[in-house]
Each structure stands twice: as C-alpha cells, then as structure tokens.
Amino acid sequence: MVEVSLEGKVAVVTGAGPNIGSGIALALARYGAKVACNDLDADAAQKSVERIERNGGTAIAIPGDVTDEQQVLAYLDRVVAEFGRIDILVNNAALLGGRGVLDESPEFFSRAVQVAAMGNFLNTKHVGRYMAEHGIRGSIVSISSSNGWSGSAGVIAYAFHKGGVNNFVRAAAMDLAPYGIRVNSFTPTAPTPDNPELIAEQGPGGVLDRPRSNGLGGPTGDEPWRRPSRWSGDRMPLVPMGTTGTPTDIGHCVAWLCSDYARLITGCDLVVDGGARAKNFAYAPAAPADLAGPLPVIPLDVADVADATAR
View 1 (spheres, rainbow, N blue to C red):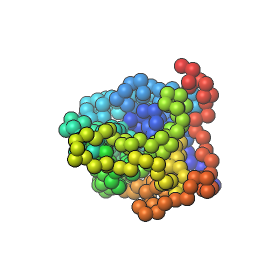
View 2 (tube, rainbow, N blue to C red; view 1 turned 120 degrees about the horizontal axis):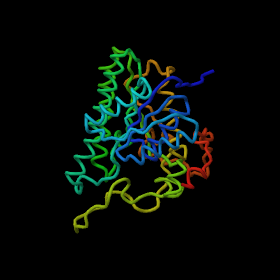
View 3 (cartoon, rainbow, N blue to C red; view 1 turned 90 degrees about the vertical axis):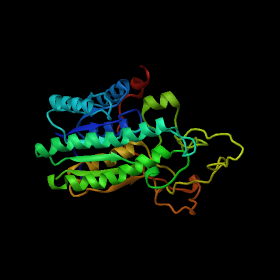
View 4 (tube, helix red, strand yellow; view 1 turned 135 degrees about the horizontal axis):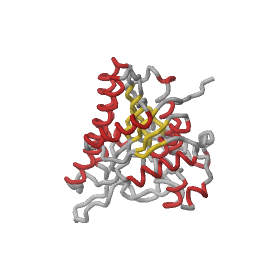
C-alpha cells in the first residue's frame, strides 16, 4: 500500500497566492511537510499560512521578490533558521494576464519574463546549492502551463515564459542529477478554484464555467483592420473528462512527485488536466451530461469554511 508521507521534510512554495500556490502549499502540509509560503504580496503569503494552520499544518510566511537575489537569499536563510533544512522547492511565482503580440507592452512583457525566469533560476540555484552542500536529495518542481506547450491567443508573455520553464527544468535536472536532486515540471490547465476564501471573493466556478473572450489576456486594439483572435460565441465541450480539476488535484500530484516514491523521476512533466492537453485539435468530447467524470476529489481543506470566510 502506498502511503505518501512528507513527514520531516521542509518545503518552500513561491507564488503561494490564493489559487494554485495555496493549494499546493496546503497539500504539502497535509502530507506532513513544514511549509514556507512566499509571495510578493505579504498578505497573500500570510493567508496561505493561515489556511495551512487551520488545517493542522505548520507554516511560515516568507514574503519577497523572487527576482531579487538578496531577497531570495534572505528568505531562504530564514527557512533554514526556523525549520532547519529545505527538502522541497515549488517554483510557482508568475504573472498572469497580459495581451497578444500585437498589443503587449514592453514593460509587462519584460516583468512577466523576469518573474518566471529569475524566480525559477534564483530559487533553484540557491536551494539546489543548499541541498547539494548538505547532502539532501531533494525535489524541485516548477509549475508550467498548457500555454507553455501549445499556442493560445492573447497571452504572448505568459506563453513565452512558460515555454522557457519547460526546458529550464530539463536542463536543471541534468545539472542536479549527480547530487540526487530531482527537478520536474507540473502542467495544470485552468483549474477551478477550491480555496474557500477565493470562492467567497469571486464566486464558485472557474474559466471553463465563465469563459473570457480574451482568455487570460486583455483586450486587443480596435483598428479597422483587426481580425478576431478567438471564437467568442458558445463553444462545444473541450475537456475529455469534463473538468480540468482543482488546485487540490494539483496538490495531491505535486506532493507525490516530491515524495520518495518518485525517487527516479527527474526532467519530466506531470499533467493534471482531464485530458485537455492530450486531445487532438479536431476532437470534440461528449457533452458534460454524457460523461461519467472523474472520481470525487479527495479534500485537503477540511477546516470549517465559516472560519475562512468570517474574517
């Protein structure tokens, strides 16, 4: 029987904001790790900590800018000082949104690429050096996106940096393999939020339930020569299993990938998306009412929802 346990391990999660980052941080804690939650927004990092603590876990907030080497070194030093070691790093910090190639600003493009590039590089470099120096055969996971593997209109900066994450992982895996340190990526696809605080703020459902005409990106220009970048009307179902899952589904898989059961998995990408990425472009799945759907999600957030929303 496989019983995944991260007891005795210490994890750092960057970009531990309310959706995917918070879900991963909670999962690592529920599987037994002590978790350090980083975010540029100190309040977001603290809320992730509070969610973990409500569910019986141990966590600290380590706010900071992942593109600033001195800040990265400072918050990693704090993790070691408080928890004694680092065994797991999850590189999740990224900028969502943006526009297409005809409309994106140099300023946003540069910042989005910097957050992903320097965030992955600096945290992987310094956590990797720490692990190698201390003989820790740890696990590093970088969060990619379906936009890093296939094209989508309206998100040119996001597509660029997520594509870079994919090969960064493979190269870093080769660099760190001699030390027994594993480096992998994880690809989600528009998960449906399940953080009670986030649901209270924006309502239930996600992008699949409420499609945006411009996807993750912003509006295009209004010049007379413009052509539409994507279909804006009603669309047929696109996900073979009917759902791309939730941050809880992502968290379960990332926790397993960071466990000792995955000891030989490195330089790989793990996908949780209900078959969305595997689907041929011409294939139209059956209507949701005709699908059996996946098994029920195994919950990780078991605290009283009222406690999360009353504050």
